[in-house]
Amino acid sequence: MPFSNFDDDQNSKPLSEINMIPLIDVMLVLLILFIITAPLLTPHAVKIDVPQASSQQISDKPKSIALAIDEKGAIFWNDERIDEKELTIRLTKAATKKPQPELHLHADKKTQYQRLAEIMSTAQNAGITRLGFITKPKQLPIK
Image: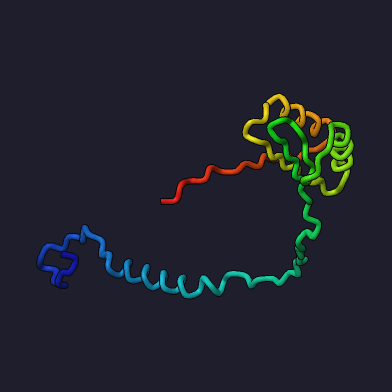
């Protein structure tokens, strides 16, 4: 034990153990002091005027062009029947618009792929970059 009486008659050997309790008490007091004073040592925030960005919705939504192809290969531009030359002219004109309109291809199920590929090639050569295929999903029977 670390405690001993003060008699010199008994063995007067030095203590071989270190009394840790006072060291732990000092450590806990210091820890509490650091916890209390640490928030006070942090520098105060500096107010900075940051530029504010405002975003607006784009009112010019690109129009879409409905290009339908029936099973015989006839072309319909927004429900108006046109021929190959008129298609090329209209696609070239549409490609120069800002923002460029989207080309929606509505193809009949029985349309030959060759005809569809020719029309896509014409659109690409005219400069159309936005192309989409519009399909009708199968109607499920209602039970």
